[in-house]
Amino acid sequence: MRVLVTGGAGYIGSHTLIELMAQGHEVCVLDNYTNATPAVLTRVRALSNGKIADFKGDVRDPAMLDRVMQDFAPDAVVHFAGLKAVGESQQKPLTYYDVNVGGTLALLHAMDRADCRKIIFSSSATVYGEPDYLPYDEAHPTRPASVYGRTKLMAEQVLTDWATAAPDRSAVILRYFNPVGAHASARIGEDPKDIPNNLMPYIAQVAIGLRQALTIYGDDYDTPDGTGQRDYIHVVDLARAHVAALDYTCKTCGARPFNIGTGQSYSVIDMVRAFERACGQTIPTQQAPRRAGDIAAMQANPARARAELGWQATHDLDAMTASTWAWQSANPKGYDAC
Ligand code: WQD
Image (cartoon, helix red, strand yellow):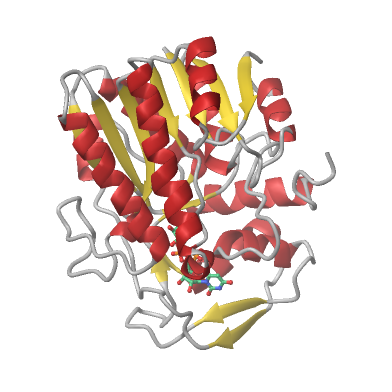
């Protein structure tokens, strides 16, 4: 199939390009490079058959979208382009609604003008909010506690109403848990701008000496060791879920959300210990109070994805930490050196 990947130069987008091309799909990227660099596509081309059409532009720009639709004529869209910093979303709510919801609306309008009827959407487990029960299944109530989470849930609702308003439309909504890790080549990986918000890249930057110590937010949660627990998923497993979702759009119509996690959760201390095994060093830590908005524990029930997408995660914790360490140690400055 011909697949347009918005935000395709990003962390998850770049890994997804490789998995799509490995299955024989033709890909095109639309990215405004506000949170990525074109050097990523150079590396992805070197890691694949090399054919990637790409356009620099904003997913909210109707003229740009029409140009991409006309030039590439996608059969389906994988929609990554969006803002994803939870803390920042609280400071800049209108920007987050404009990009994450407005961008999805603009994309769907352009798809309608081009008669493109299949979309896979990058959503997040943060749409669930504080758990009534764990592991979360897709029927769990959605009560996002951040602006970021509310933009993702609103975009899900737009997609659901779009997909059910006309025949032969399909919207697959992937609710990511915590993406981590890097491609086996160590040529692409997570490269956060500024100070990492997320745990794994922060630990990796401590290990290469960019940061002094990891601050552990909270040791008084109702978890076995008191630190926060999350369902970490290897980015290559996550990328493969998008390929499975694309196949699913060829068999079904309407909208359907899927939890994309492993079903196994680990604490902050578990992650530190696992990373120490991967890098062969001690990771210095310091204790701090809980981070505002953090939830004690999150864990996916991925049964629906296994049953209906034929997908499940295959990479274990050591593969997540070892691939992160390989990427970080081979690219101490991320893509900046490019
Ligand atoms: C994980 C655990 C922290 C950093 C967010 C978004 C989610 C997705 C992934 C976009 C928590 C602890 C963290 C640190 C720490 N992003 N921690 N010290 O908050 O679960 O999820 O990022 O899709 O949507 O909500 O991930 O990696 O920030 O935190 O102790 O320096 O690590 O308290 O328990 P989170 P995280």
